[in-house]
Amino acid sequence: MSGADASTGRLDALTSWHADWKGLRAVVLGAGVTGFAVADTLSELGAEVLLVAAKVDDDRARILDVIGVRVLRHPLDAVPDEAVAFAPDVVVVSPGFHPDHAVLAWAADAGVAVWGDIELAWRVRDKVTPAEWILVTGTNGKTTTTQLAATLLAANGLRAAPCGNIGVPVLDAVRDPSGFDVLVVELSSYQLHALPTEGPGALHPLASVCLNIADDHLDWHGGAEAYRAAKGKVYANTRVACVYNRADEATRRMVEDADVEAGARAIGFGLDVPGPSDFGVVEGILCDRAFLEERHSSALEIITVDELEPHGLAVPHIVANILAASALVRAAGVPVGVVHDALGEFRLDHHRIETVELAGGIRWVDDSKATNPHAAEASLRAYPSVVWVVGGLLKGVDVDALVAAHASRLRAAVVIGVDRSALLAAFARHAPDVPVFEVDDADTGTVMSRAVAFAESAARAGDTVLLAPAAASMDQFADYADRGRSFQQAVRERAGGGADGDPAANTPDAGA
Image 1: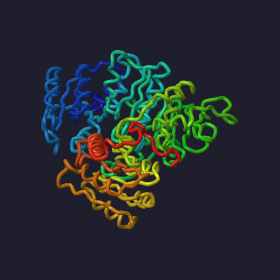
Image 2 (image 1 turned 90 degrees about the horizontal axis):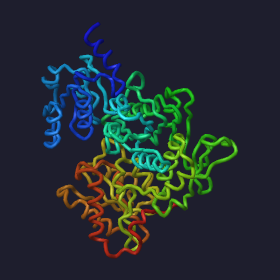
Image 3 (image 1 turned 90 degrees about the vertical axis):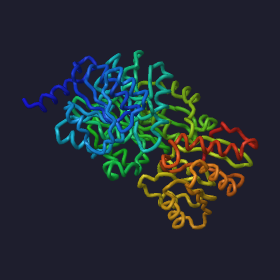
């Protein structure tokens, strides 16, 4: 048996925390939250670990040294000689490393296995008690749906944790000494790209959903088809329910193309009237026609749109998230009554269609989390008359269709960010009558104060000033939350003190 075959055979046997991991040689790429969790886990298992990253936080480096992990600071513009000499059995890559990265190309040529953190977590999920996994992906709405599902599961007395791309590494949840009954795992396209769909590292979730698909991260994946193929992996080997969006044909095709376990059902969700085996809305009532014996003639009432409205949950894309989350947890056996009561207590994250102020008849809304055109479109559709604050890093995505679709509802637009030229050209082509204000990036510290000043000059009573950037934030801000906080601060400095409504009423017109 060759050395490569022997290494592969050993890796195939590593499907339990209690397997023999001692002496396994692993290179970990990346020293962020995920990379640190991977290195910590492998060290705890007894593996020999070399962590390689361009930057390593000093505090993390000290901890890694204490637990016996070797740390190599390297620009990673080429394969480090130290990594080659280490002769790893496996490379565990953090999300975001491009598929053709030099180290990954070297690993492929050398016959070294490449795992992501999700595969490692699945292999060691039995440290305490193996939890059921529910998987959530999509271009938009992942975090809200993940949090919703975890909340609904917990309301039924289950120990449930939202984790993954939501900010808590799955490996931290797997190693939690209290253990969990269910993990609701938010997966990015980067994480899904690295996942196998068969073999010892393949996931077998209880339920899964791809909420929607729109062009995003195309520069990373190399095109729309590759991006969609990565997202489609979420359904592989699903055991109970593959949940898809009836309004997005691509998600239906993903389910049809997926290899699932015998007995797994396709469950559609949408804002229209549901068919048998679907979730939907009938005369303002969210309904389940999937998990009841009489589904061909009856439906179960989940909650009404009117009940959701006071808490900002009645906008169409959030209703869709609620239906998807309800389908996932109903697949896990949560009663409809529990879902209804828990939804009454649920609140959205900050920077997700969050009303900042209502002053002078003008609503100021922070949807900084709308980091791509698909998310921005959902937000724009919720308001009839908008002063739109838009722009940032467009990531190679075309904004023409978005501008054209919503020109008629725009009072004005305020363009920020480094990729302004594409947006300005789109407004000139598709919305020539809409006033457009441009905030240059000479001083990033004043971007939002200038943007808010422009917006205030254009807005009229009845308008919504909407920060829905349709772009990433890292050109001028640390992240989308930093961008949202900057917007909120600027709004309160100009509009604060004159509110004539409840700033916490995170609610646009429900029927828009």
